[in-house]
Length: 154
Image (cartoon, rainbow, N blue to C red; front, side):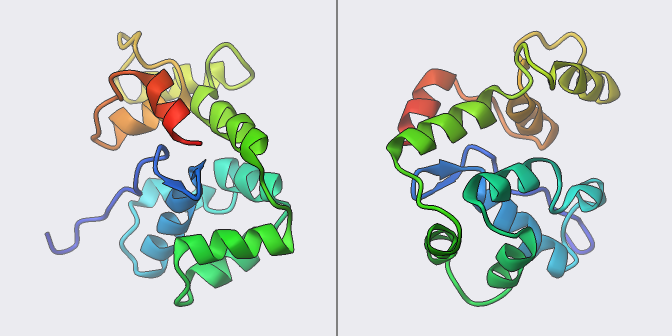
């Protein structure tokens, strides 16, 4: 499909047990190639990208530089562990649960509800988190058992 812009990979995708990280790198690469859907442009480096880098204690600009090089996702995350901080299994559980539950009865609930309304999904009571909204908005199905997805992330 020539000229067709792409959505990033699922936030459930993981690198070395960390969900969302490969999505952030995928968005960087798609944008650089001119292939990222326009509605993602304004939040590059902000939102969950910023939270992810903050959790890793690294600069988004440095991650971006690495992502545009020839390093694999795993190599970039290992660099993050060296430049920022190493994540242990407990850190991964905390991050993965934060990410996959964001918007469920917390400070982001109103944002999820607004995004659902914008997308004509107000009646979708099965969409309770930002990640679930992303999945549906980007044309993917919700996982059958979210708790199984989360436990498999670590």
